[in-house]
View 1 (cartoon, rainbow, N blue to C red):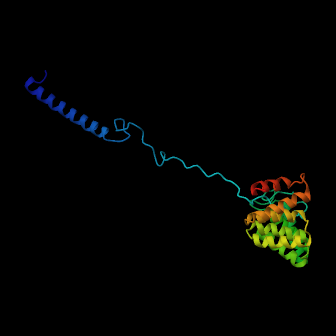
View 2: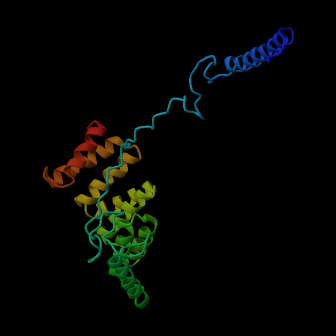
View 3: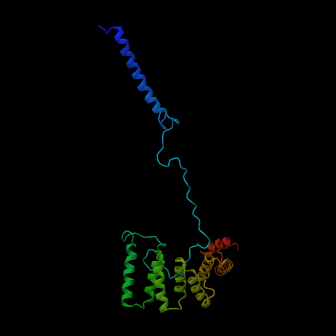
Length: 236
């Protein structure tokens, strides 16, 4: 048998009030919470800086005076793979030179140990350091070679290139001027002088140097396109 009405009705009324109170509490929380199903925006909250607009990376451009500067042709030693600066030809140790280059370096250092005045070994080591973009070390070897053979225009021009690559443009220019004083029409020195002059802001002198270079080598020279591009930048 059920409870009498005078007892059952008050009990049901109390349960109904409790149910409505609890429901109202949760609804009040929901409407006051951002990102909830009933919140102000109704949108899912994002973490961190997801709403911050990304800043585009600056476009990389080469400033005037950053043309690749050629060496004179004393060049890398034999069996080095004729690698471009920074490139490897396989073998060797991780982070180090490839096996053929390491073997050549070992032999050249042994030659210098036997004869510190071995100019050919000094120049070969300098060229290998240059190819590895270790221009400070290349400069050191070139200087040693020039102390033994100061009239060598190829070595002095190559040393000027290494000096330019390390930011010693005035010293590089002095070396090139010395070469051109003895050999005014030495094409590689003329071209490199144009590069250095452009780098230090001597635009009219750089224009003269590149025009002189084009007259010396003609339009089909491998460096002619670089010279013409430099002239275009210089407005000449």
